[in-house]
Image (cartoon, rainbow, N blue to C red; front, side):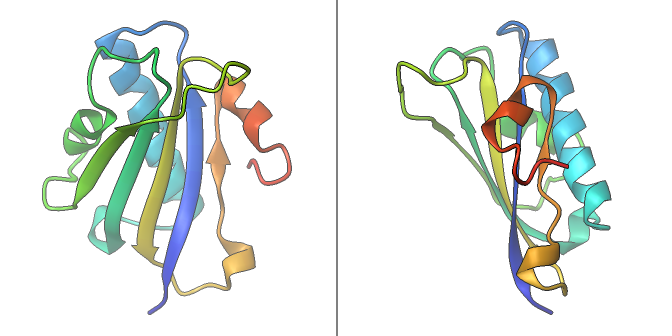
Length: 120
């Protein structure tokens, strides 16, 4: 089995804990579905949030989805003045036996603007 990195991002309407959890879970579920994965094939997940998100950790939302034994980490994204606000980004590492070009990256809501070239 090959280890692949899967990218994803979503945006929030506001920095609210319930909304953060909803959008994070939506994104993680879409990433798993797009690549035919279950939590058992995920090696680790790295989340970043723009500095305007402080209501909770996106990893907490993933834990609610069954990622209890998957290493998760959160960090703050760079504070670039022209960056899209209220964005959660994900880098998921998984056992995925497909060529790198066939990995399905997922961008939702306003975050589609970040990578129109690879958004699914």
